Image (cartoon, rainbow over all chains, first blue to last red; front, side, top):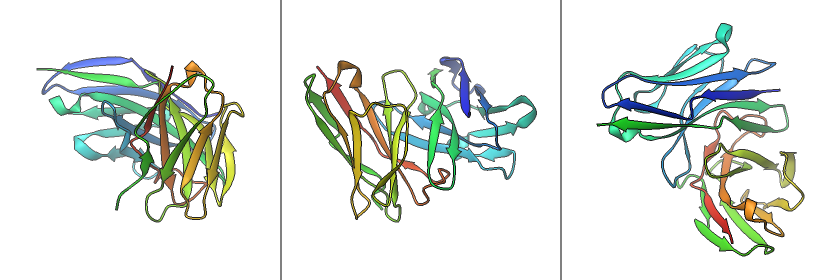
Length: 115
Length: 114
């Protein structure tokens, strides 16, 4: 069965510092992996997705993630944090067959940015 | 393109009541999925509708039911509300039922049960 584990429920970094949010997945088949962002009182916005093409995936707002099969990881990074990056981030894996699909989410990591 | 729209945005209900939430998918999408996001947690899959049929269901009781209309819009119904049903309910739409790579989420309906 597919699942994701996000390491660290809360991460705090200084403005301008590197952002690293960790995600490990479990999947019996090649996975589709996602990172979503959720701002307070809002829905989910897709940051980036891995669909078995390039292992380094670039997303919106300067974020990127690298798929590492050997480590079953899909960590999210951004070289320089901005105050506007403060939000909840969810790693997710897709579970699909020919007739239906669903997304399984991790428990989330809250990112805080210190001035 | 309006994207995925949900209504209402906020709702307060009393324990034991019934509630109906609505979702209009993104233009060109015919598959709708519903998720429940409790406070401080990640979204949990409730069910998915395609061609007006429930195609897959998560681990939710029968109190949770849904419907999809010919115009692809969808409703989520919850009967006999519990306090624990208080959550953000998210709707996601996509164009292929067996694929989530292009799923788009709405802003959600915040349900509070008192």
